[in-house]
Image (tube, rainbow, N blue to C red; front, top):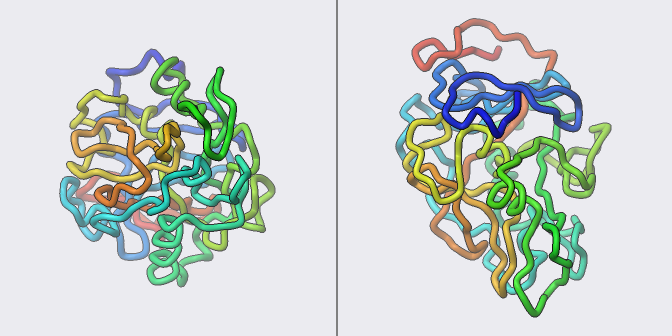
Length: 281
């Protein structure tokens, strides 16, 4: 479906990702609940390789509490004065480098190691997470530019309203070493949601939306770079459900991990509703 034409609709739509055709949930859906590893999750989309991408919702199906996140407040990166700091991983003086973990990645990895490591055989090591560091039209990358530079997600979501599930630079597609694609830089198959995925679900920059499944009355991070104006800024999801610009050193937003259930895993039971979620064995 044309994602730009379904702003007021709920259901499942299709788009193309780096593996094939992806089917994503949009709007006020209540058939995308999963219980896995003792936690509740919401399905974001079925990836092109058949794996299932999910975002954390905590230990209950309550959707508007702080427990929908693993951390009540955490800076993406306390360092903010270089454009590299928009990266989920970064390398000084490189636009697409991946030698250093962002502090937010350390938080996500630590949580995964403590809570999901024993379920790793059910988590996809093929699917990836896109932290797109390409530039918007008219912007040229620099570590410390003299004027504001904008990233491609800003052009897609703020200017053109054309989100994508494809990751155009493989260095920005965070994958594990066993994946056939991406940068192979992850030690754990876990990441954050992208601003494009939020947009496809129903989130719009600067517009309140409390009636789509990603709304949780909380403020949390995406992994999508937005702009650099002396401060490194990424997209966040604000407590009113809108996409928002979030300075990476802001310690107010929280963390909602995203994982992918492997495409060979069996759904034991359930119909996807909050009362009867899909159960992954």
